Length: 221
Image (cartoon, one colour):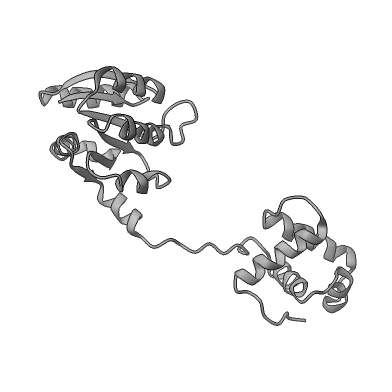
């Protein structure tokens, strides 16, 4: 196989290159960032690109973005991405793109035979997915409670806002000062991530968030 390796860690990059070379494969290029990877793939048209998910400059998802670009521009090149942790942002789209793609956690490299087998499968149009990656991708999404950051008192204030009460009315209901209620309301709007703007509009958005979360119910006095 003709192979291009993209890994910012020189030690790991050279280690992978050594494994592949010892197995009889030809490593055409060894690079440390996504830009150099795309240039190398365009130049060498490899059978396989082995790509680290996180690379310079931001060390976020440069490898995944580059992998998607390679899949689009060079469909004849297989792509095997390696990651320390599972990244799902682009994984579903890449996996659903068909064969010639693999996604392994880096510790799988320690099982040399399995790693080389995965490289061979991906280079010939097959797939190689780490069991942990598969488990993550098929797991049902975890529902996020938009009100999770609110304190019990803030939830109480929000419930009374949903009833249409003013700050003065909420203060009277809870036996608190209006100033205290204003502080609670400001905290609620901030924690819900509502953009700055007209106060009444933000209150409506907060109430809608409350209702969508299924938290509407009689406020406790």
